[in-house]
Image 1 (cartoon, rainbow, N blue to C red):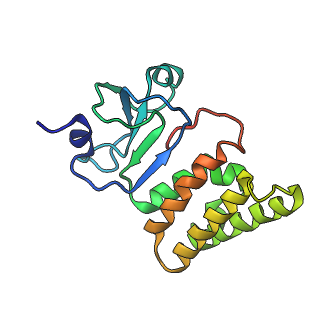
Image 2 (cartoon, helix red, strand yellow):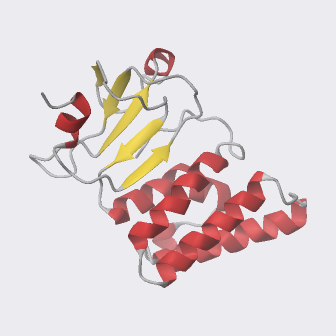
Length: 180
């Protein structure tokens, strides 16, 4: 019998695995985003512990009880096209952290990520974030994303951006992030 997770994924490949919340508890429920296209599975699956299921009623999608995965609370499995995941990163943390708006750069992702990294580097130099600080980690991973995009690989850029999303939680006020 297929798992709940397999059924919800509708056999699609995961585009990105993200950590939208820092929580060490094991997820017991799944919130799912709307379908990208009619007849497909949900756009994303957010794994939540009981406390976060209750604390985040504003997250879109109904809670699905009985998740049979062993993922931690806050893990989001994303099935959306790469461009939509990039826009989600911009909405959730990249624009709030850097002020860089993808629409202003016509969603040319190299420019968006490169300009964002320049903002982080400037802030790092100004704040003296230190080698071990979150700004240093963010800059290093944004640099990797910029390199991936410069090589024409938007999909591969999602890996360092997922890490950046986790690091950005230390830099942004707690907002109860939800995948968009």
